[in-house]
Image (cartoon, rainbow, N blue to C red):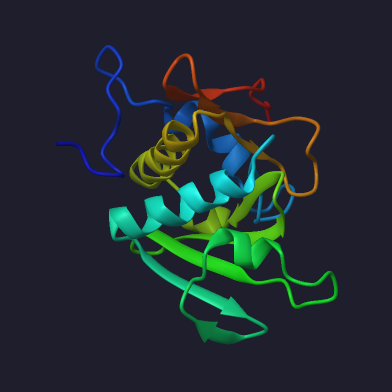
Length: 173
C-alpha cells in the first residue's frame, strides 16, 4: 500500500514533475505561502478533513488564540461568534511539511503551505499525495493559487483524472 509522499504512478511517472512546476514553488517570486482551497465546501466537508487527519495519524495541533486545545467538531468551530479568534489546525503530513488550515468559513476549506518546505521532487510528491487524499475524501478539486490570487490556480487535484495536475502555463525566466 502506497503512503502519502510516495509518487502516484501514471504510466510510470509521478503526478507532477519538479522540473515542470518548480517555477510555481519559488518562495522568492510571489510570497512563500500560497493559498490552497477546496471551493464549494460545507461543514460536512470540514468534518471530513478533520476525520481524515485523525484517520491518517498525521501529526496535528489545533489552537485558538495561541492556546492549544483538542480539535472540536467542525460544526462547533465554524459556528463561533464573528468576533472570536480565528482558530487554526496545523497538520504535518510528513516531517517538515506543514499545512495550516484556517476555519474562516464553512463554504471553503482553505489552508496555507510554505513553499520553502516543498522543494524538489520528493517534497512535491508528498504535497501531491496530501492534495490527493483531501480531494478524494471530499470528491472535489483542491486548488493551489499564488498567495492572494484566487483567480488563477497553478496546480490542483482533478477529481476526474484522480491526480494532481498542472493548471497554469510554466513561467519562463
